[in-house]
Image 1: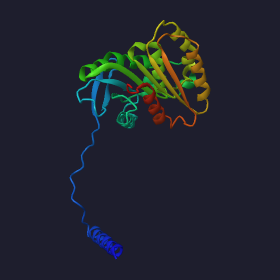
Image 2: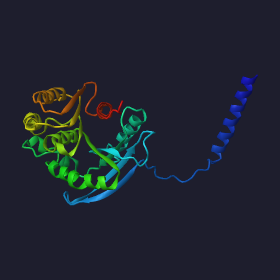
Image 3: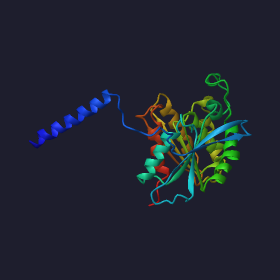
Image 4: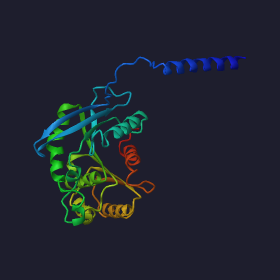
Length: 280
C-alpha cells in the first residue's frame, strides 16, 4: 500500500509539473552572471610591440593560507579558449587530492602562436605551416623581461618557477631549457615538435647541455604514440643520456596509447604528480 501511495504521489507531482510547463510557467531565477575562476589582465609588450592577455589561477590546498606565497607555473597556449581552463582544473583536482603541491598558474594567451613558439628554420616544409615563424627568441624575451617581473611584483610568489607547453609549445619549452635554463626551475614538454628544422633540437641538445658543468633543473617530457613520435622521443632520450650534467634531473614518459590530440591531459597530470609531489 505504501508503494502504491508513493507512486500515486509521484505521478501527481509529475502531472502538476507538466501542467505548469504547459502553461508556460517557469521557476523564478536570477539573471545569469559570468562565472570567474581566476583573474585576467592585459599588458602592452614593448618587446613584441603588441598587447598580450594573461590569465591567472591559484590552486591552494585546504591548509595553505590565502595570502601564502605560491610557486608559479607559466603556461604556453594559456588562453581561455586554449588550454587555460582545463589545465586550471587539473591543478585544482591535483592539489585537492594531495598529488601536487599548491601552485599558481599563469597562462599566456596567443596572438600569433606559430610565430612565437618556433625557432627559425631552414626547411621549406616548416615554413609552409605559417606566414611568419621563428619568433621564439623574442617571445622568450617578453616572458623574461616583462611578464615574469610583473607577476613577481603583482602576486605573492615563492620564487620557484616552471614552464609547460604542448606540441610546438613543448618545443619552445625544450629550446628554453637549452638556451635559457636560468629562467625556470622545472620544464615540462608534452609531445614536443622534435622534427622542426630538420630535428635541430635533437642534433644540438647534447652539445648545449654538455657545455654546462652544472644545471640544477628538472625536465619532464611526455610523448605520444603518434606516427614518428616514438622514434624522435628515443633520439631525445639518447641525447639526454649521452651527456652527464651535474644536477640535471630528467624523465621521459612514453605514453604510446595516446595520440598527439589526446596526450595533453594525461601527460600534464603525470608530469604534475612526478615533479610537483607534496613533501612527504
